[in-house]
Length: 355
Ligand SMILES: NC(=O)c1ccc[n+]([C@@H]2O[C@H](COP(=O)([O-])OP(=O)(O)OC[C@H]3O[C@@H](n4cnc5c(N)ncnc54)[C@H](O)[C@@H]3O)[C@@H](O)[C@H]2O)c1
Image 1 (cartoon, helix red, strand yellow):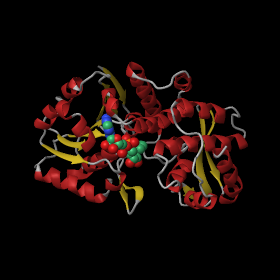
Image 2: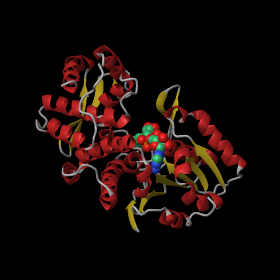
Image 3: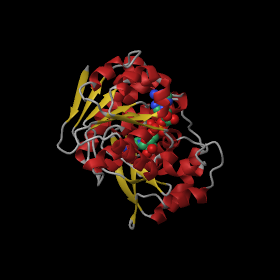
Image 4: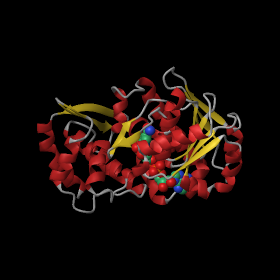
């Protein structure tokens, strides 16, 4: 088994690779290091992998099974997890193991970081997005009054256990959503990964594990510098400013990954207007196509609605909004753009996405 270590005092997390084997034996073996953990488990993973997870469940000190729906990522579910922890009588030395995608990992990690003022945390991501992004960097959170991630902490997991075998049961659309984050990460910090992706339809097996660990290496580097997201970490928002607005504007007809892919395309075009690499939008388009992601919005998206959603984006400052724009491969820059300037630019962005 291979082991990575990001070891700054603030973000120390060990990442253990358990390979892409047919079953989860290695994951179970690895987890034996943490005796009688409390489990927070994605309900879909629980039913699809029940036989493999049974021994783990049998040796746990308690379990909370959560349905991974964004609307359930809230304070009510959080308090239900706390109640289950209390009912199980867990103590400060009980480790918490969270197994699931980003929704369950964000919620379970927040419960672990707050119950009894913080318990040891082990994350086992089961979606591609969670493997390449959400499992690392310490952001925990739940939504409040419909607004995303309004309550949370920075609490890096002690250990992340990677097992790409889980991805065999992941629905295709979820897999593609994760690929958008892979492309984003390559664009931000790994040109070679970008070239690898250009030559392939869809990575699989060992290659997939390699893709995941390369993404985590990039994210690990960025997070180490700015764990609490006060500056440089914001470059990880690339594609997300337009992406989030498109996601809502489409009435969630576009998935998160599909919207982020389109967002990257639009934001690369914005960077071209400011002197960025002219070939980049076309390269992104071809990477998105390769990954089976859309390069056009499809349904009509009203510009005024998109603009109003963008002005509500949390990255707005009085002087303007901070955009994380890709000027080239491994050259993502934080740029402050005033609302007046944005008004001039946004119609062009929308036209580009409808080409
Ligand atoms: N903490 C962070 O840094 C961070 C970063 C990015 C995203 N996020 C959060 O992640 C969430 C999205 O996470 P996601 O994309 O992983 O989606 P998700 O957690 O909603 O999971 C998607 C679906 O896949 C199912 N699923 C999970 N693993 C499966 C498997 N192996 N086989 C079959 N089905 C499986 C789930 O039950 C769910 O229905 C959002 O809430 C977002 O805010 C957090």
